[in-house]
Image (cartoon, rainbow, N blue to C red; front, side, top):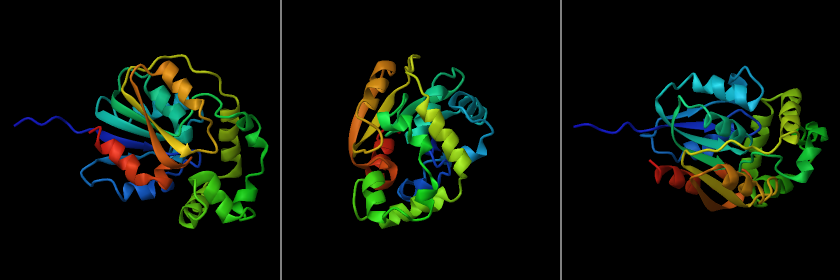
Length: 228
């Protein structure tokens, strides 16, 4: 009996790049789903296009699904431009393709060390990133992952975001935009960028903050399973 090959699930992390923040989601994913996390630190290149080509070499023509969190939406968009890849579906989780909000134009000037040294109350970080005042567990996970990344690397990524222009290449691969209802970091206009370039786009609103894979992992996993 011939079975269709099941897609491998590729998880691309947000700006911290470690992949550690996928822990709550991975804990809920069925073991039958072949899942690979690609930490940004494992890539030699810095810009999204070069990173996409680097990732593409790992998968050849194998059927894959991509779940790209926030910053990595830029990499997933570039992966969609590589015709040799066999991408079945892309999830853009609170992602952006152009500068996500006006404040991001200047965000790379902010001292990242403020976050590192617990100078900002955890309830505020919980509200800002996870859409709730009492997710101390997720704030701790976020701060833990942040400690693995240098200030220089984070500043480089923030600067890259600040200089983003509007994308223009079309995507014909089926895509789902997972929009966080309490996103404080990416403006609602970010969805319009995806509507412009994605020929086959579904928008799904999930209750939670910008880090939607952490604040609502259950519904993120359900969205993935529904696409298998």
